[in-house]
Length: 244
Image (cartoon, rainbow, N blue to C red):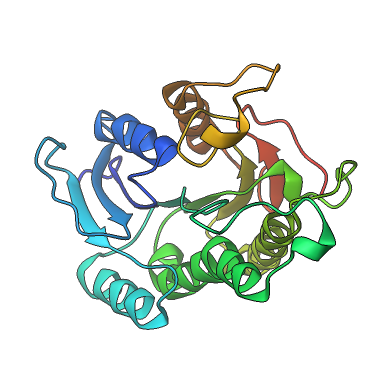
């Protein structure tokens, strides 16, 4: 393997931003191999030969364990992990406007998919990240998960799940700093992007809404240039720091 080539895992590679990121990574000559995941089986026809699709269900602990064990057994190391997986709405699952709309099972599902699941994957991949020179972990969070920036209220479960994710990543970054291989762990708010996740909420939005390809290009550049200054931080896709 060329010493300059990179390999990585992309979680949620079939969503709007995830698919656009996969396109970015597939055409990057410095990336040799990508493990791309989605919650239902997909095939790699039409993708670059460097892409391998895996079925990953962030709501299933056994599935997460099987995947991470397989990766640890088959890959020598990992240079990056990007998580673009997440949920905001799905069927009866909708953002709450008032406390009275909270439903415990919906709250649990959001916490599992948005926080517990991605962190469990990172825990399983830790041995591979430790073997890389300057491994990079980028997890898509959301500005509404910022406690300091919450001025409008609402969206209880989604806000709480992303705040939990942010705390997990901040804590993981402190631990990863002890690996002594210049690891970079960061949470990133991608900005409002046209996708299945955002579609019901952007119709009346006056502020600009980005296309997925534009957001992916910003995220790709941030990942490439991220260094110790980004470790343990919360940023926009353009690299501007956000408050926790």
